[in-house]
Structures are given as C-alpha cells and as structure tokens.
Image (cartoon, rainbow, N blue to C red; front, side):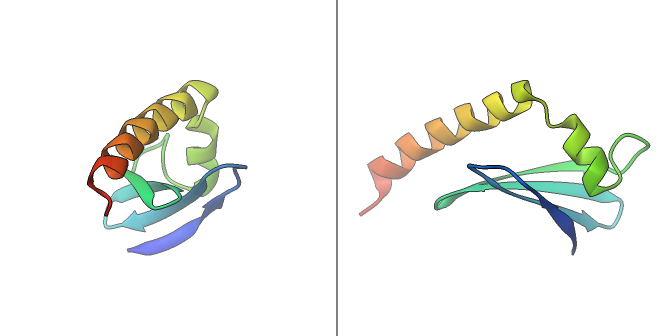
Length: 78
C-alpha cells in the first residue's frame, strides 16, 4: 500500500492510499478511524479526484459514523 497524499480538513486527518487496483481513503479522528476502499476508475484515481468527491454530505455521514463509534469506544474503554 502506497500513500498518495493527504487532504486538508480542520477536524480530520484524511489520507489517500493506493493498493493494487484500489484507492483507500482513511479518515482519522482522535483514537478512531474509518477506511473506505474503492476500485480505481475514471472518477477515483488520485488525491485530487478523491477530494472532489468529498462533499459536505459525505463529511456529515463520516461524522455520524464517528459519533456512533465514539459512543461504543466510551462504553468499552477502560
């Protein structure tokens, strides 16, 4: 897996990787992370192409998942 680059965001660390014929987008917030794998195609092939797809609606859904993950994390964290 090779790091293609990062996407700037005020609350998230966003990394874009390439592995075989897949583009992997990793979102990190504190101790939590989400990864999404996409087949490389004419829409998703570089950091710039991924950044264009990350709309406010996508970020909203990512944060909703992080909220749920954090609730679980708090329940199991010692």
